[in-house]
Length: 341
Ligand code: FA5
Image (cartoon, rainbow, N blue to C red; front, side, top):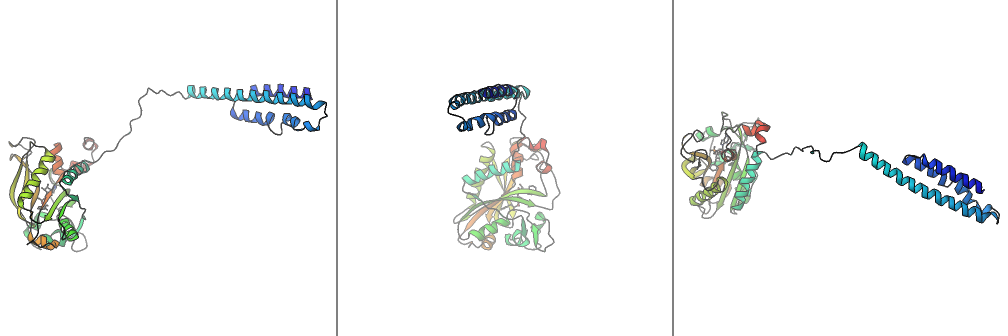
């Protein structure tokens, strides 16, 4: 029996030397140290041996078991190291190589300028109010004091749907009525950003689809001087302190009195150039005191409440800010343009 144990030990240690992988090691373990292995069978059957034989066989059996276990652990460690070494050399990684650049998206200049404009109006107490792109003739025109056949409709001709009276809005002004009807009789300070659509001859400064940003303030004792001061402050914040603001008398059916808001041309500093058509000024918004009829249509008593409103073109503001020469770039989807912002 002792000889049998010696030969088990020798055979097992020899077989261990040729086990070169994790799988081979596992097989070896089952074969030589597993429950049904010859060694374990001998150790398990010690009770069947005679009193004389048992101590010596038991002692030697345990020695062999310990030796095999120790050799097994050494071999596992050696193979782990060899595998690590192999993977370090075979799959060698040059950590000094530059990484693959991730192409990062960015915000469209529309979104960037809108966020800047929102932040300025927010500081002046104006909240964003969302209004729909698809409007009714009633909201886009009638309730804004532009009845059927009014000549002002020519300026704001639009796209019509197959449902009579349902159109794409030509300006964000119909949102004034929605906001007033929702908040009346509370005071209002909102901006209404969004897309507008017009039947328009496309040019460098005119699109058939473009952004507008309406503003509306309604309350008691709101005066023209409040509008002029607020617009001047907005221009100072968005264009910087060097640019001047000018107001020109104008006409809109939904404001009385009405003004156009101009800023001094950044290109020439106000002396006149091609960009400003040699006037020194660029128009950025229409504005005025909310017409009494419009206040009434919104639910406010014009004898008690007053307000101002404005409608500006964020694309034109972006063009002035960043020196963009053509409004069509915003929709051109040309990466050479978009990547500059
Ligand atoms: C209006 O649309 C009025 N609703 C503005 C208003 C609101 C006046 C509240 C009084 C009170 P106007 O058509 O001028 O006005 O347009 C206002 C601004 O929108 C313009 O100054 C311009 O910046 C922009 N805009 C107008 N038409 C286009 C277009 N076709 N393409 C790009 N921007 C445009």
